[in-house]
Image (cartoon, rainbow, N blue to C red):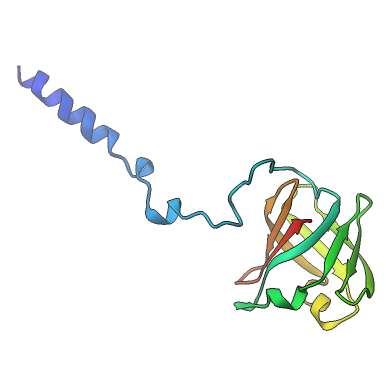
Length: 145
């Protein structure tokens, strides 16, 4: 009889493991990380025209620096940035074979220098969004226009 009474307690305690517990930090998903309708995870950069919707440099939000810019990620690895005044800046990008590092080579002005020649860690790659990060607080989010 004692065994029958102990079984529910043992089963209950066995189901309460640390792996099954969800913390508030696990539940907090930023808007950058949520998939939108029609958005699919992909293994390569989807060619097309993008804009920067988030740019954090050394912890400072500098998204406004790229207001009016467009970035044309082309299938052959070319990257063409156009600023709000119509100035065109050619460059390139390369995604490593594991899909974990995106290197951007582009220059021409101070704003683009912040993107240039860095090995960015890929945080999210979809058919509509590219989210990259460097060690530390630097984050860039490109969204398809």
